[in-house]
Length: 416
Image 1 (cartoon, rainbow, N blue to C red):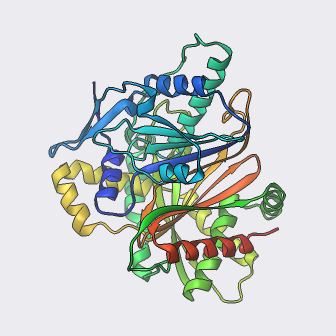
Image 2: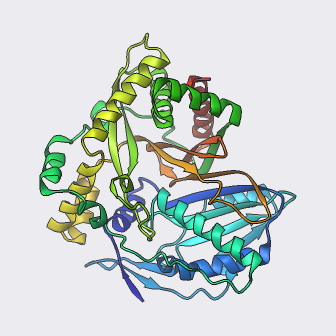
Image 3: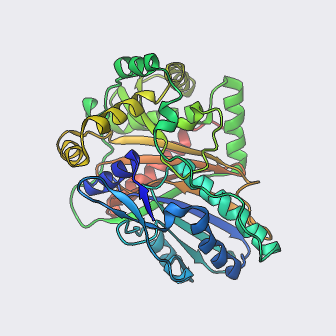
C-alpha cells in the first residue's frame, strides 16, 4: 500500500536532515502496579491496523516522497521489555528509522511499578496526534482485557493534509494573515540559550514535576487573573530568559494546535496540524510576575483575535505549490531559519481517556523531539493535576546541568 506524504511529513524529515531536531515524539506512562503484558502485545500489534500509516516506511523519492507499507512479523519488532532504568532511558532517547522501520515502537520497564514508553515518528503526527494514538491504545487495551475477541471500531485513516485547516478560511483571511502576521524571528534579536559548543554529545531528557498542590495553586492564580496556564508558563519562561541573558527584548516560538479552528476537532487521522507563532515581550527589570503575565496574555490574545497560526500554514502551503521537493530541500538548506528558543504545551492528558483497565496510572507525560544544539524547547503536559516540564537535547554533561538549573529557576518563577 502506498500513502501520500504530506507537507509536514517532509518538513519534519528535513528538520532531522539539517540537524534542527530528530523527529521522534515521546510518551511515558508511570503505573502504580503492573499491566497485562500479553494484552499489551496484542494491543500494540492491533493498533497498526487502527492507524495504517504507522506500519509504513518513508521513501524519500527525489521527485515526491511517499509512505509504503512494511511487514511487521511479530510484536518483538515493535515492543521490548527491559528491567533497568538505564535500558529504558536508552530506548527513550533512541530513534525510529523512517526508511526501514514501522513508525512507532514501545518499551515496558518491568518492576513493582511498570513504566511504558512510546516513541512515534514526528513526521506522522504532532503532539495532538500522539494523544489520539495513546487514547486509542488505552481504549483497545481496556476492551481486550475484558473481551479477547474485541475488534476496534474506529480506523485512524482520515485526511492528513493542511487543507483540512486551510479550507476553513476565506481567501481574504489568508491574504490578511500572509501580509500582516509576519512576526520577527528569534534570530533577529540573537537570543540563544547558553550551551556548550565542544565535546562529545549524546541525547538526554530532563523532566521536572510540579506536584498537585502546587499546580492547583497555579490554577487558582490563573482563575483569579483570568489568564491561562500557558500564559503563566510562558511568563515564567520569559523571566528566566531575562535573568540568563540580560536582554530586555525577548521572543519565544510557541506551538499552536490549529485544530482549534475546526468545528469538529476529531480529524480521525494521525497528522501534523501545529503551527508556530512568535511571542514577543519587552521586559522591564522591575516587572513583577503579574506584570509579565499581563504582557504575555495581551500579546497572545491579540494573536488569537487575528487567527493565530494561519500565517504559518498559508506560507508553507504556498511554498510547496510554487516549488517541487528537490527545490524545497535546497531552499531549506540555504534559507530556512528556525527559531532557536521555543515552548510547546501538549496540554491536559485526559485521565478518563488515558486509562488502562485494572492498573492505576501515577503520572503520564508527552513531549516532542530531541533538539540539536543550539536549538532549545520547553514542553509541558498535565495529568491528574501533576504538571511536568520536559527539555530534550543532544548535548554534554554541562548542557544537562544547565538545563536542570533552568528548570529549577522556571519552577521558582511560577506562582503559588
